[in-house]
Length: 480
Image (cartoon, rainbow, N blue to C red; front, side, top):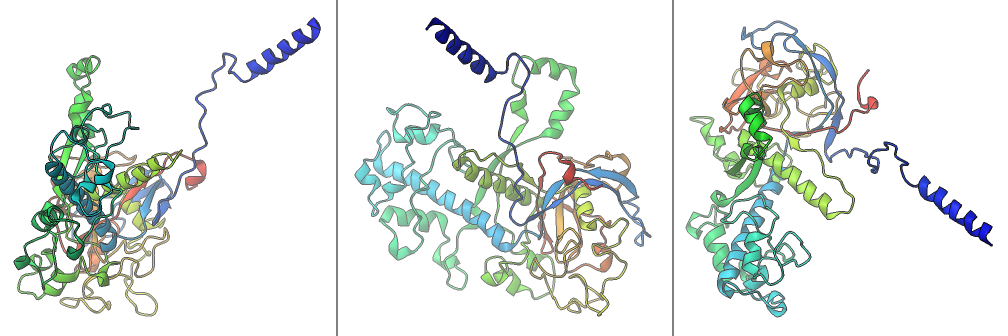
């Protein structure tokens, strides 16, 4: 009997030890990661290429000398960001601000230090149902004895829009009511009509209009450029060993995010473009057209929101990892993608011609002096128009020029790195735009042609598309 017991103990010990690392370095085990291609994006496999002008510099600008560089793999939007896609961002901000206003009014109506009963929260005829959400399961907030208003201020989830308090949780479980005749009570009506919508005498064509000035998006970003310079100072390195100095390099950004629809009037003097000003952004007829009137700062805010929006969803799903940040492409990434794998090509389709063998134009631009319609388009066209390049990207030439992440310097190619080159400068307000637009001549459609615009400016001919870093360096993702 003893022999049997000893044998069983030996088996347990042997199999028990086999489950442990036995003192060996085995690493932290994790599920294998498979990159997920974002919807509407295509993978641009990293490689080296000759950036800059390989042919004659007709304009004699001398700002893009040939330079061999290498870029890493990344995903890129197949089309420019459309009005419909940007409206999703605007609507999210609008809805969040509306809930914020309703929550504050619900607190005022109920009284500070109180918390609504279940009956009050279930009352669909009262604004109280929009009271800040109480989540006793959230370990990041204070204990259950705290009032709803205190939780409203102290909960750790930071929402990305403008408000008096940075830290609170809104109730997104209740649908917003937009029809005036369906407002639950007077307090709700006062919030919506007095704070969110413009007065009736300012409605365009008698249609209720949101006050776009209240549509502000709040977010934080890390100033890596300033941080990199600080790391070069011995005094900073010494202090960083003792204190959390990294936090002072985070900057809060609060900006209006509604496109400037007046660009259609401001960009062209003595010209009748009122229909585009009135309808281009919001009318469903233009939903699939590229958004314009968006500054460089607004484009970056959109990219931040897109990252947050996706990661909020992933956090709601078990075992869904966070995604890499969406962002604007660097100048080198944009040109590499525009070339579509064709070395030394003049245009995304190769070159050097701007029409195909049937005499049809290959992009949306201004073919002749004063002639905008020869290519069958007066202004912009739908984002998925003309033939894509060999990477599957549409309108990398013409339609709208596109913001890049890079700051503009005429001699940048002389000093930027040859690996993932990028001139990042917060102080330089001049940003590189690429690709040419519907109002440009063929020269600006060249993949190597560089142009600039000020970051706080918005134009009727400048839009953008976003990229996302490819995580990992699988050899199958690299061109040979």
